[in-house]
Amino acid sequence: MESMLQSRAYLVTGGAGAIGTATAQALVDAGASVLLLDVDADAAAQRAQQIDRQRCRGRGCDVTRRADADAAVDFAVEHFGRLDGLVNNAGIITMNTAWDADAEQWQRHFEVNVTGAFVMAQAAGEYLKRGTGGAIVNVASNCGKVGYPNMAAYNASKAALINMTRSLSVEWAVDGINVNAVCPGGVDTAMLADVAAWLAPRLQVPADELLGEMGPAQLGRRIAPIEVGRVIAFLLSDDALIIRGQAINVDGGDTPY
Image 1 (tube, rainbow, N blue to C red):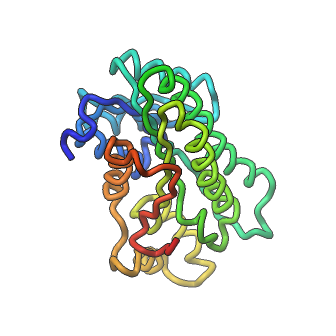
Image 2 (cartoon, rainbow, N blue to C red):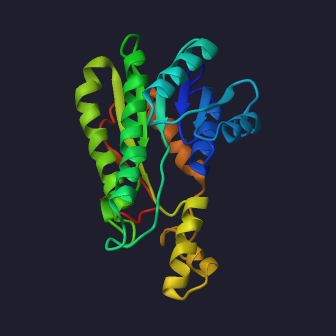
């Protein structure tokens, strides 16, 4: 694992979150350098320093803005001398019933979770195709396959991201860019804790009790973010060149397809 991505460089969006930070750690552990991107620039910089002061940098980035995406690519190339790929991890969720969710909430999910990923993929991809190619991994969710209650907008946005992954894979293979997605579920993150907190009063069950039941049944525990990060690191490597356009479940066996 240590030299799997030796001397390569990657962008990771949503870098201040648990999966983003863990992914950056996994990439650094595999020998890569990482530009950690987040809408919260200070948090991105702090996380980067905690991971590796030499090979990890943090920077503010609104993934929905092409100017921000281009600036991130330029910064990475200038600082690391190259760019080999992208991890689209930035995402939001607003819990609501399908009756109560409004169009603004719906649009915001798609703006960040889908359009933001596309904007970043285009910006990074245009650099990659001019060189020797590279890889992109989109962080979707098993919600995009299952469709859990009270999160219709999130479910739909992640389903769209899964389909976008397939589309980009087919189109960009000729440019030497391999595109895949991972579909986490039951990961020990602040987002999952927020879901439990929202559900608790509605189900009349303590939030801690709900959260304790949100790990995959086959594991009997929640998934650690670094476990997801290591799968992402593998998908960015040359060992994964035969895996293309896939939406790989990293949910401990909860989703069967």
